Image 1 (tube, rainbow, N blue to C red):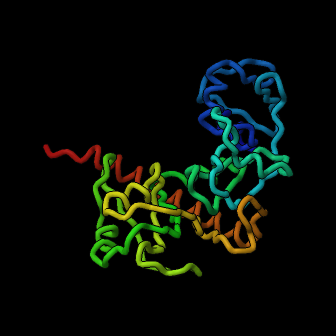
Image 2: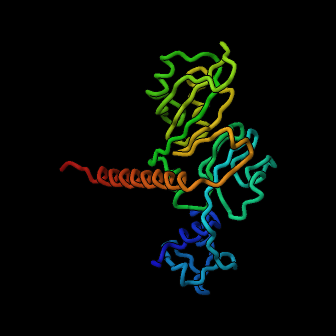
Image 3: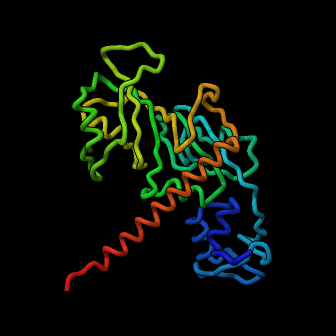
Length: 266
């Protein structure tokens, strides 16, 4: 097996994220064949070299890909300094160290992907990859057609413009009321509380928010709040194709940025 960067090897082993692995290297907590390595560019072969992290030999975990139905009032992290319930409270049977691919707010429910595959995670959450995320959104009032069109054209938030790629009115088995409306909205970025802020901007605050799709994955009634399951082989195959396409978009984006940086007139 060819050598690879240490931080990538550590992340792929499921020990931590790649960024956290970089910090471990810089802090002198990583050894390769008994020698402390602090340079981020250092490489190793996990099939031949003995790699130790904080005194423990690095053991590569089997890959795990999990769909989780996050309930309301649960933080989408593995720990919380405020003592709130976390997704870890629902994952007691999982021996691998899986981490969430992106996050959902404390007061948002729905589909989350959990995995210890660092490369897949990076591909799916990078902004330039534009991984689609679809939500059912209960809002105050009855948005007009012009409002939905404005959401697709883009609204200006405090951290820049934002838009949805698709939005329409739905009635997902709930009583229809003149006081509120259910929408289905798809976005391709993951800024903090994005949909809530967009709906506040157009005058229809969010009462309830549930993610029902992420990439090719779809939440069904069979998976109740707080439950999880492993992805099927077909779901995983399609998800890896989405990640591959997202990586290609990112590489093209980076190439275009480099070209523009040298686009001078003389």
